[in-house]
Image (cartoon, rainbow, N blue to C red; front, side, top):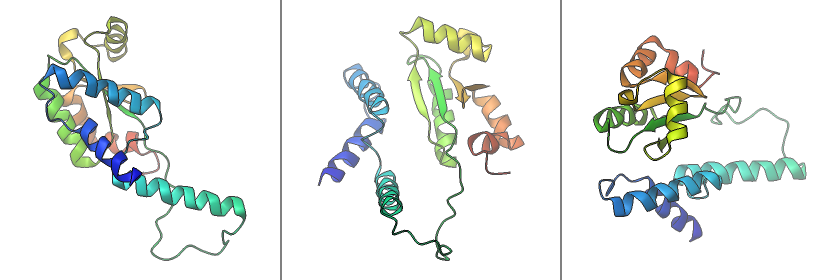
Length: 173
């Protein structure tokens, strides 16, 4: 029952419904940030299943009941590294079309990302513009593993060149 509540709350805070209404946007943004700070206790159902499986595997390894034989033929390889974090820095009232295009592209590729509104945070905004070597009107800007990629056009260039996949998943060569 608690898992259903956690996944339902996750769908509420990740939904884009009501983002135009400040009364919903501000608390939802705060809830998203708190969820990230707490290690994402609110997550999707697939993430919940992945965590359960990892917890069970860890318990079996700790108890010593894990077998050293080869994995089952249908088992997924587990040598895959953690995907690099993707951050999108934006201003809530600027570049909405570009932000939507960036989100659509990353969603289509199944890439998880974090949105961070820098409109009220001058220090973060200055940092982003300095690191990405961009002007204020060039937001939103995408960062992968702390390195600036740029805006939508640069992200598309990275995708076409194959750099995006390599940057997100270093194990894919």
